Structure formats: C-alpha cells, structure tokens
Image (cartoon, rainbow, N blue to C red):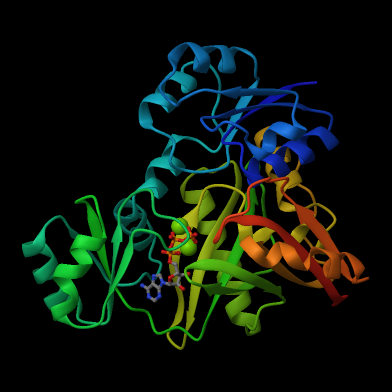
Length: 350
Ligand code: ATP
Ligand code: MG
Ligand code: MG
C-alpha cells in the first residue's frame, strides 16, 4: 500500500493516521515537537524542525502523497516538499487561508458575505480602520492565530492603543463585529475527480475563544442549511480543492456570514466519527489518495464535547455513560486550555 505523509502530529494527525491505516495505508508523520500524539499510532515519525532540509527530503522520499493537519507550515518547507511529492490540498488553499486578509478578500471576491475588514499595520492605519468600520470591532493577527489567540476586542476608539499592543506582530486585520445569533460550520470534501460531499452543518459553542461543543443538527432553516452547504461547495470548487475543509459561519438575520476557512479536517467535524458511516478523517484520506468519496449522510444526532484541561477528570463518568463514544489523544501532559480528547454523545437517530 501507499504511504501518506502528514505534516503535524497533533490529534488531527493522529486521527488521520488511524483512518489511513483502516484503509490499508501507512503513515509518516513530520512534527517539530518531541512526542507528537500522532507518533503513537503511525509507522514512521520524524521529529525535526520545519527548516531541516535533509529531514524534509528524506520524509518526502518515503511517502507517496503529502497532507497536513494545520495550515501554518512555512513557505520554504512547502517549496521543498512540493518539488518532490504532491501536497493535497495544494498551495493555493494554504496561501489563501494562512493570511486572514487574503482569506477574506478571496471570500468576498466569490460573492460571499464576510465581516467588514481592513488591513492594519500601525497606529495610524488602526485609527483609520476603526473610524471606517466602527465599534465594536476585533483586531486579529493576519497569520498564525488559533483558538482565539492573537485577537483583541475594541469596544470603543479608546481601546485601540491597547489592542495594538496586545496583538503582537505588526500585520493585522480589523474586523467589524458580526451580531450573530449562533455559529455553525460545514465540513465538506472534494475528491481528486471534483466530486463534492458535505456533512450536515454543526452548531458550535465557543468558550474563551476555544471550541467547546458541536451539536448536529444545527438550528437552521431548510434554506439556511442549503445555503451553508452550497457556499462550501463554491469555496471548494473555486480552489480546485482536494481534501476536507472546515467552513465557519455566523448565522445572522441577513444571511450566513463566513468567518474563516480551515484547509484540513476540523474540530467541529469530530461528531462525524459517530454520526456518519464515513467520517471526516476517512473522507480526507479518500480524497487525497484519489479514492471515491464516501457517503457524508448523517445517521444520528450527536453532541460533540471537547475535553479541555481538567475536563479529563470526567473521563470515568463519560466511560460509564452508555450513549458516549470517547476519543482520547494520548497526551500525557495536562494543561489549561489544552485539547486532551472529545466525547461524542449519540443522542438520537438522525
Ligand atoms: P479557530 O480556533 O477557530 O481557528 P481563531 O483563533 O482563528 O479560531 P476566529 O474563528 O477568527 O479565531 O474567532 C474565534 C471566535 O471569536 C469566533 O468563533 C467567534 O465566536 C468570535 N469572532 C471572531 N470574529 C468575529 C467577528 N468579526 N464578529 C463577532 N464574533 C467574532
Ligand atoms: Mg482559525
Ligand atoms: Mg475559528
């Protein structure tokens, strides 16, 4: 069988490796950290920095196709790998989504709704942006932000200097605050042949900037549900995308507003492991290896709850619950705000 190279060995890489092995593939994970969670479950692990050219070349030589579990891989690393083996999804999807400014421009050019936004590089451009967009607004780093890190709220113009100091790294984006009723996401896949399959949208609850819970079905009307799935398909087609993508949406009275896209399997898609025949991880492996996509239909109602930090104390109780499937990431060190696992509660038939 073929070998799949995975950049990044966190829980997403781990669950991709498990799905790949179920399909008869081997995995080689590359991660700069010492004990990547994916390392426990895959045949080969390379722990080397992103700029280790020799390690990258050896990694590329050992695999047939390369994918990734996070989007902030340095450009030079990708250049080197791409010369050797196909990277799926490809560079375009990465470059669009690595930078919140290019991401929002891309979405707007597609005719989709986004929060109003302006680039910010210094105090003067921030003052101008706040004057144009108004408050409340959110200042976000253009690159590398996740779990709400690298963001500062601006409730009034007086907050601007503090916000700029908080969001380290000069390149930022100011977003107008979207008054949404709730947040949903669509997990969708596109195959090598252009076939598209989307999962039912999930409703997402965040706490302290971190995803806490995803519920399917989401509270959406029939037409909102169709809109969500169709706009995800448009994004995938526009990028000639191959693989699974997560599309985060705000639900507003004016329609669905796209928050951000993630060119990978997504935390809000973990419910598919116990709600669908083919989950997002298998779907991604199918897509990048050129297999036909599986059925994305939902056969159950599911509540996915992340186990963050001390939530791990609830593991015995979750193990005792008959309707819960537990997914633990094998992380030995518990830290506040660290995702340690998740629990899928199957609450009914879909
Ligand atoms: P992730 O871990 O999802 O990648 P992130 O760090 O990229 O998170 P965002 O998704 O941009 O952050 O924002 C985190 C959360 O903050 C959103 O899910 C939403 O609840 C809130 N938020 C972000 N942008 C806006 C906005 N323009 N208006 C209102 N709320 C927002
Ligand atoms: Mg993000
Ligand atoms: Mg987000």
